Amino acid sequence: MLYIEMEEVQEQSDQPPPSVTIDGVNEDCHAWLLQCTHKALQCVQKKDSELSVLLVTDEEMSELHLKHSGIEGTTDVLTFDLGSNEQTVLADIAICVDVAAREATVRNHSIQEELLLYIVHGMLHCCGFDDHDEIHHQRMHAEEDRILTEIGIGSVWSNSQ
Image: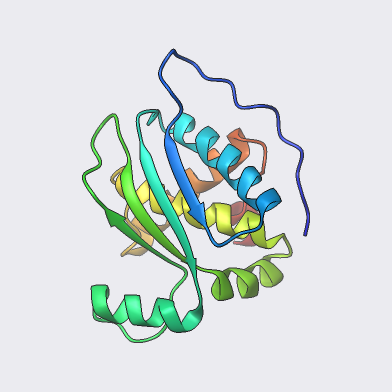
């Protein structure tokens, strides 16, 4: 796995950092995702936030997708907004690690970068972004690229479109 060196997270205020829980990854990947997720929340000015991220398999995601969206088959990410507002992101995010592994290979980057992309995608759904039509899809991808570039990862979509 590729590990990218990142600057330490610097808090912009006296508030505690957002609460972020990420289950299902090894310790090094967890630390990197946690650090990047905190930076991403700062990019969208959502410091008082709580995110819970769970990695699931294709089979588990297919069950969640059918149960919550009425759609058969797996998907990359499902976001459950639990009451986000202008200051806060409050959400549970389910990410399919199998989809992430396949897409990371296609995009020629690490699986942890793909997982981070999905976390940012889920956060943006809680910030009012949507991707149900082409115009909104492009806007959301542009915002994902902006955030990923701002935190030092670089764009994903402008490189692949």
